[in-house]
Image 1: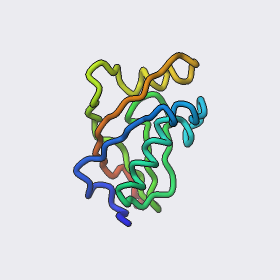
Image 2: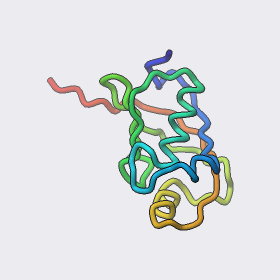
Image 3: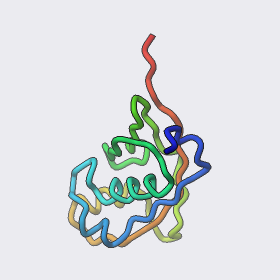
Length: 115
C-alpha cells in the first residue's frame, strides 16, 4: 500500500454510469465522484481511510490517509466537452441528467501541522 499520494504522478478517475446510479446526492463520502475516486485509489494501491467531496469545487475534495489530508492539484479533464467538477456536482445534486466523465489528477499534502 502507498500512503503518500504525492508519489503518484497522476491518477485517472473514471466516473461511470454505475457511479451515477449508485451515488447518493449531497453525500460527501458516497457521491459519484467520491465512489469513482475511491475505486481509482484502490486500483493504484493507495492507502487511505476516507474520501470526502465537501463542496462543488475540486479544491473541496479531500483524501484522508491516516492523519494526512491530500487535495487535488488542478484536474485535467479527459472529456473535451465536460464543464468541470463544479458543474457536475451542482447538476447531480439538483437531480439533473449527468453523463459519465473522466479526469486525471495528482495530489498535494494539505495537512495542517500544529506547533
